Amino acid sequence: MSVGRAVAVGLFVVGIALGSFTDRLPERLPQIRGGYRVLQGDFHLHTRFSDGFLSPMDVVRCGERQGLDVVGITEHNNLLPSLVARAFSSATGGPIVIAGEEITSRDFHLIALGLHDTISGRSPLPAAIAAVHAQGGVAIAAHPVRRFWSLFQASAAELDGAELMHPIVFRRRSSDQGWSWQDLVEFYQSVHGRPFAAIGSSDYHFFKAVGLCRTFIFADGADEDAVLRALKAGRTVVRDLEGKMYGDPLMVGLLEKEPLPAPAEPSYAPESLLDAVGRTIGWLGLLGLVILGKTRSTRA
Ligand SMILES: [Zn+2]
Ligand SMILES: [Zn+2]
Image (cartoon, rainbow, N blue to C red; front, side, top):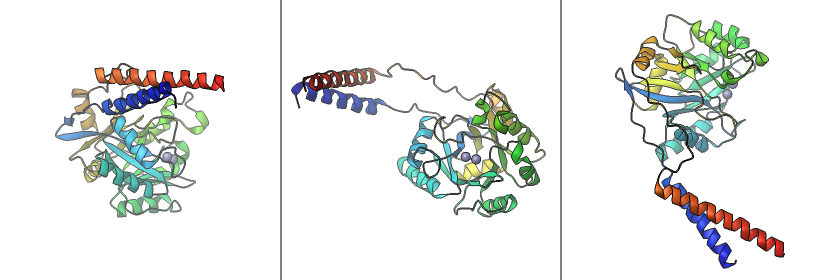
């Protein structure tokens, strides 16, 4: 290797190392409203164990970077990835991971959280919900668009909540192949007179971001059990694209009175002098590699 290329490689490696060293997540202070800790959660995330892209560990890291306190890994009819994610997150000080799965059948999809055993996708909906509850878990109607309504309505008294925010909210035409976001709002609003958790979830597979849609949870602690208790009690709020809030009216009132701090605006600007130096060195190294590499290949 020529001296020039060795210097370029060195600069590039030092740039990457400095960038990694200075890349720190902004500190987030605990948010207390009405005596509850307000946690941000995304309860519907897939991994490469089925039709997703990232590993369970990557999903946990992405959730952390997106300011999530809680992630629910919900693979299709498979609990294992969420257990892997939970072990990884607790070993590395990451977000709370709720073990779960998306119980997936031809007729319905059900988000099951707080499980310790896998539940088959072959069970009819009432049996699936009963199996979730028998494990002390929470059963949430996944993307309840109109074509799933008849089954979900028949079991509405047993459900603990329903997804109200979901990436289908970004679809241009509300009638897109029967995937209308308005259906989710109507289904949530059709359940009255008892706690019923409004859920915002990203149904993350690959293109859109983890945490794109999220749930604000009013928890009496900061662990998996506290999150499950809050969901069972319906102490959640979700916000639509216009900022309108849905969920427990008391909790909505608390957030109206004292909103959560706005997330930091994304920016290309360096965060410190060390960050700026690292970026410059890294780019110089990369530029050197490109130029020197090209010169060599021209000679060859
Ligand atoms: Zn689904
Ligand atoms: Zn899904």
